[in-house]
Image (tube, rainbow, N blue to C red; front, side, top):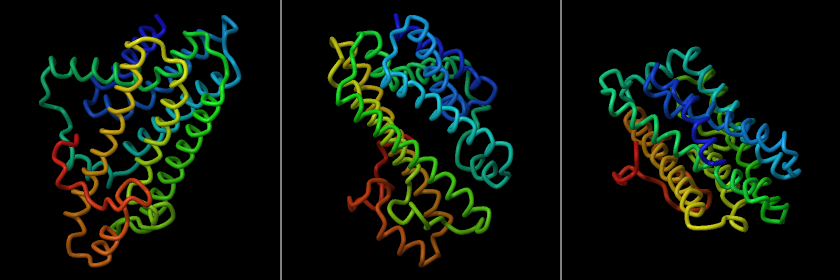
Length: 265
């Protein structure tokens, strides 16, 4: 029942994608996660079934979702250069037929519910606080901070250097630290549930949500690489940067995903 509720919450919020197709996976994503966190706080708070760690994790979902959704919404309307680039790089969905829109809507809502499911299942299963939950919550916090810092760094850099690739701060560690932060956040969510998942369905939902978001983030990194390769192809500084800085995972010498056509995006 808990999973069904958070799925319906995600379904309701992500319906903003019917206004603009890309919002199913951008603004609708962020605010759906925030709404799921809010729903968990309300549902289990009124029943006095929240523990300190589950309250923190649900609150982190709210913080994560509001920050991401708000950031994407502001960028959508305030950054004309970003809007122009996205119009060129991503199909705006104007020609997507209603059946595919409906499938995207339901699929996205299901993914968002699966991503958050380890926290929901911990509450549903009346699991207490354990070391794994504490570690998972800490990893979540690190991921949110990492992603926020990366977005802030790139936003400030692009205001001063609109035609140059960002290679300062966290971008010296990896070329896509915002996507890394996303992966770290959901790694924390998944880790928090590994000791309390009960039955095949809960494991399938938790593992499926985690693997899907990791796949999407690697796909996003590939999409960014292809776009930057096209934009900065003649810049020797960019070529040096891309050849010596891991694309997504620190200390792992994976510098390119351009040939990984199986990745989404």
